[in-house]
Image (cartoon, rainbow, N blue to C red; front, top):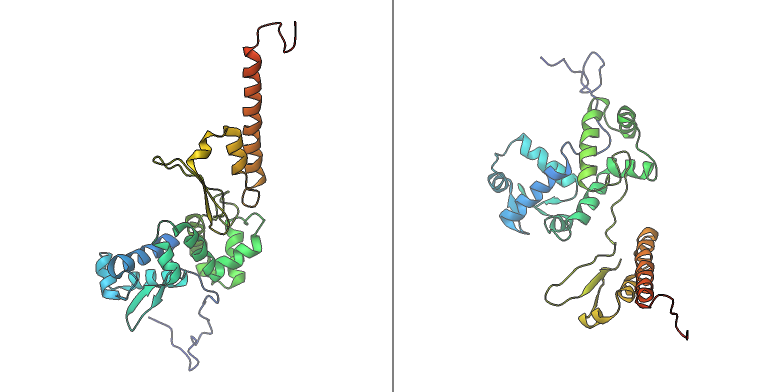
Amino acid sequence: MTPDKSESGLPKDGRRIDRSSIEFPYLDLDMSESIANGIYQRAGLGNCEIDELAAQLGQTVSGALRLKIAAAKMFGLIEKDGRSGYKLSSLGQEIVNDDTAPRARAAAFMNVPLYSQIFEKYKGHLLPPTKALEREMAALGVAAKQSDKARQVFERSARQAGFTAQGDDRLVQPRFDRVALSTNQTSPQIATQTTSERVVTAPAAEADKPLKYQLIDLLAPDVMTDAEQEAVWTLINYLARDKKSAAEKKMAPGKMPGAT
């Protein structure tokens, strides 16, 4: 039985309902992404009614399905469209595309108010231990009784979005502007991707250049980390030293250039 309530809607015994004052999903990013994919497979970029979505996912219109839909909306992957329909948001359209899905997952993670606040507070620092993190979430507005569930979903979503690639004890925003190398078997080319998404290709004719010079051409300080640049230079120096050693071995013992 439920306790009698006063005119204010609160229980007569004075107890208050513990509600969260900050938004967070009850299901993780992967589950939300499955909703976006279901809509896309059923209706493309158009309207998908909830009963159609349920059939596409092999489910029924139930509280469980509505909870998944609510999570997908909070991550910014879908939008309400009509009385009982939904459609992909611009971010949802990116997440169903394999080429843009990793970037979309990172953006979706930051769409959740609780997650973005934790990220900003602990950027560059280690995350607190489990119980301390739950207390931190409670301080940000998560109901105390929901903090354990909120933390678990947060940790799974952070991993799915790529924020814990450097370790589960910290959040590091994924980068998508790293130098990318690709090989075309029919027409050898070297492709690099810059921060502006501009693709620069070197024609196959440049394959005739010595390897160390091809590596020098690849250096792109604006998009490469110091460690990446150092690795390329180490290989260039190795190739130069190896070539010099090979030249010296060709000389007869005891004979030097210009010797009589």
